[in-house]
Image (cartoon, rainbow, N blue to C red; front, side, top):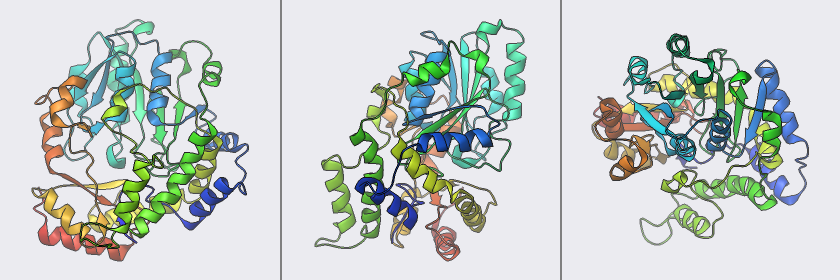
Length: 406
């Protein structure tokens, strides 16, 4: 089977059976959210945990309860996804972009300090590819700034853990006011769509958050079941992606992908339309059941990511292995020739928004030089469970032989 860096890359036979059972009605999903909540509260010291349909839903829910005002500023890094920016725009706030460090692809914290203003109300700190940002330093900088402010104007630290889920890493969530995980189709574990928001410091938020969460709309049955269908559809696509039909460029898998998208059976998770507010929803019991199945294998998934990243050159638990090269287009094509679909996070400062559309979203081309350099030279190598050591070595041989590594 072909290796995809995204689109449920950690699917096991147990996941396929769970998805089939949910759709056929032989697998019960009743109580799955409560079961999932218990696991997360046990892992994170009984903190308040809320589950949403998407990470952007979790962010928007949080921002609404921070009582952010129009034109309040929210700091985030360039080299990110539109799904991170969208809830800032939905909240009528001004995004303030910060450059990154090339060695980690995370926010440059000294440049972050320089961007803090009287209007700064929140900072979103991203662990890019699973590289853990220096959260203790973020906390130190923000505490110094907050000591000069009234409590009502304190800066809120939101930790973006969309690229990592590791219960053994106790640094995650330790220094932030809240943190969230994504369970989208291309994350550490997946329920096709999904997110968990964990609140450390409730005093920042207004009103009864539990009551406000209860008022969040639920997915319809059809919308919930989409998440199970997605798993099965992508399994078929991947198994047949390189199987030729008639013309050299037309394959069974590509035809299936086009067919499913045409009929709305599957859809892209993030696109230029993501900036348009389309409401927020709670996670469904269907998604929770899919996630509970994946959670059984979390340690194995993370161990494999670390082992494969080590073959490539870094002994870290990385969602994707980032590499800067002079010839990314050529390398992607050479990897396709061995059945590997590599990744392109992030080939624009706010992916997948094209360069000519960035200014409309508040990003000025030229303001983050390291972001823009990395976007033009980045390629991501897969670390997911579908990649074994032999395949990783084959990928590494392609890189060593053809890549003009920067």
